[in-house]
Length: 413
Image (cartoon, rainbow, N blue to C red; front, side):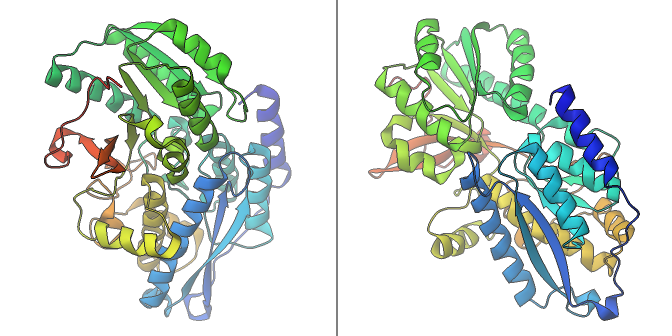
């Protein structure tokens, strides 16, 4: 975030800062409002809608099961705001949800660039904010008391990408020497790239391309031309949905075929990605928090229910949004109140290891002193053709690999 934007956002938050209290006695509680700032339009709209639908399915289940029993069966009510992937809009909508809609707790905002200032705003008001997905490390590294993140932070994602590359080279005996970084130029992409450079150097790769681009670009031919000229063994990607599709199709059109393409979830995990690129994505590796073949109780059934309801599979990021509703419900149940301090303390004491939320790929949700879920984990899937259909197959860690599948490494398209 640039300095002028930072000053503007801080000024906006300070100007609106007032003492507020949204606590409602349990006996009078009819509905508990959960404010959600998501990108429902703009370049990240598809993932915003997926998160919205995952939240809705979870809340329907929680309310159908009796709501928050310690509060007389109070029902959860979702209230939405569209960030448009714009940090300034995200802050103003967070202010609106807190001051006008009087929400009891906040979630969002998928984009790290939006989540970072939005959580700062909620912290100033003392309103608990559960972050399902946004991965920028510093979202939970500012000494805040009301911000909690369920997903792994980006340093963990990058760490595991290089662990994957090392393991696969050892497993196959194929040595990768050169590497290229291509990434959207927002907080998410630049955050990944910064850590890629350090780990690539540690692992002895030669960096032959380091190329940011705007995710709103309508033509990525210049980026792919540079990639073709660089001829890397490995290409690391961070993309939103539209640019992931454009980049993949442009690489195929220009016959750019690196040995390994390793993406970072987000746009590459969006169901619309495979719909729009088809076999152009064959053998691409993608890092996600969850995959449909994950071996967890209830995962298959929950995905089947979601797919029947909305027409596509759950993604790792929508699973985090789904789980976030159960984490909030669990905290409210133990808090037995909407008092922000009590809800905050209940979130901090979370140790959720059972129930519908545990379709996640890791073993539970428990926050460290910074509000980061210390159990959050990551898997890597490969796009493969199985029985004539494209599928996302879990390949790493090897212990989680789909039985009978041998990863194609290098791709050799």
